[in-house]
Length: 211
Picture (cartoon, rainbow, N blue to C red):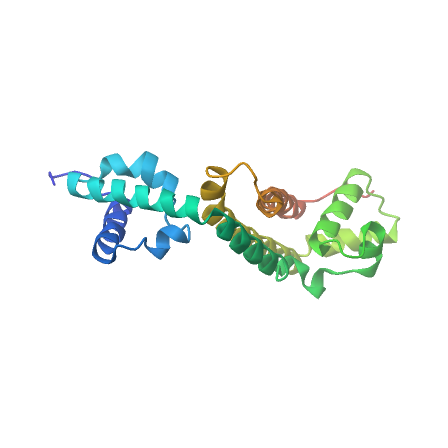
């Protein structure tokens, strides 16, 4: 390595995983679990590897794609199980976000933070300081402590769902035309929750003139 050359620590970590693969002849869990994105290894990092490791990486990629194609249906089952487990334990489903008047207004089984978002969006468009419900909701979602609890729950759920997408999206989408709805729903929920996060973060600046 020449003086002043920047060390790419991602490359060093990938080389470490390749050493494990070479030694055990087993694809490392960090790759199977999506800690390291197989597509990034293929398109970004492989050409940064020394020749020795590039050769090992080529063999690992070949082995990886072969295993995925052979076990694609099992992978879909594992995806569904992990998706339902995650969706049944969302932080945004806690009772502290549930309010009977909102749950019944939309639907009883709606994600309570989603219901809070819908209602917040509605009253932000037509806020009436003489309406008790409007005043209550504004006070609730702009309260610093409660607002932070909402943001924390959304961040946790986004992270959980992103792990699912990172682990399953590439191997499934690139090896079958029959994409499980759970994978589509996970990506859609991430998009929605990110938007809710930004909305609740910005609502703290809500300072309508109530005169």
